[in-house]
Length: 448
Image (cartoon, rainbow, N blue to C red; front, side):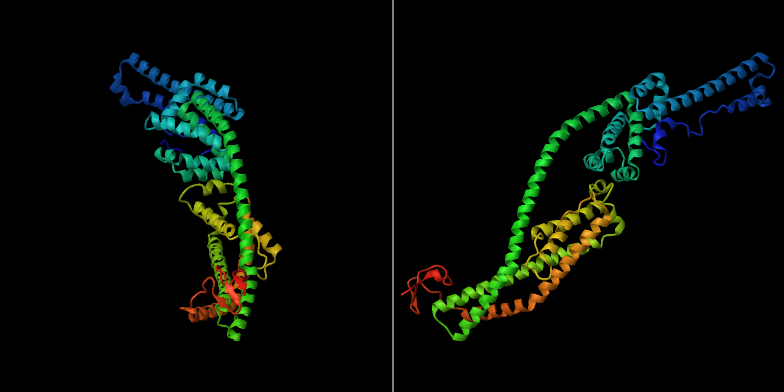
């Protein structure tokens, strides 16, 4: 691809092409030319005694010098007219420059050093679409993803383009304008840009409707999942614990009484199952909170300069470039939020020292993290959520001794029950007949 100096003033890019050429002829060359005419050795070689030949040679050199001076003046005039037309935004005036200065546009195009026409047309087309995309970070990020292959094919690193845009969005827009005009000329460039804009407007309406529908569906699904998981979490940590406590008391009373009938054994098995349900629910919460806590710590260990790049202006663009640290960082943040939604962090009721209101506030702020907010606000939301997880972890650890006690009782009961037969339908025990089904369900027994 044609090469350019990224440090130049974008506004004067095209107008200044050729000005920096130190080999270009200068008006001061007149003195040197006249000096050469008076040079004795040159006079001898050209015909020292032939006055007409000497005058003819001098006149030719002077005319050539004047021609070069005229070219420089025309180049300066072109640069000024171009700068004025671009600054005014008058595309008609810009198109008119092609007719007025055809040789200047040709010189600029040749100076770009394109390998072939395909490369020149590709660069011009990319410039036209990039100009439209540069109006917003989101559009620019999508453009980079879509055209990464084309950029690489013509010798441009997509990461360099993203950096140029982030450093100076307005300057980037001017730069691609000048690049596109230099590649295709004003007529073709502006026509191509207009076509891109028309297609973009047509697509935006359909995409907007589709995106709105998808957003509403996602919000509804996330809400339903959150409510379902919230209810399940509360059930696990509150209702199941209460049932397990009651079941433990029933088991102890039954074992102390020495009941050995089939019905008594069924009651004991039902009590043990309730205790097992609570133990399993507790361990599930331990695993979920531990996984979330580990992911939060991974996010907090990200370098500050990398973390900052995915938020605020340019954050969306940076995180959309595959294989970059910014893309990996935002992926980790989304993973962190996804884990939270999966286990229903909207509700913390019944989970120990974290109040329901406090847990909801922290969860809402945490799940609301997006790339439009500042890095400072994102860090604050993550820090608050980390504190909630820390307190939740402490609560679960406090409950662990009771859980371990239940597990030992469960294991002891199961060991003693190995080989015991379940009651058969129609079997009578202690004045009751088993009807079938769950032996632990009172409705499965009929009083004789």
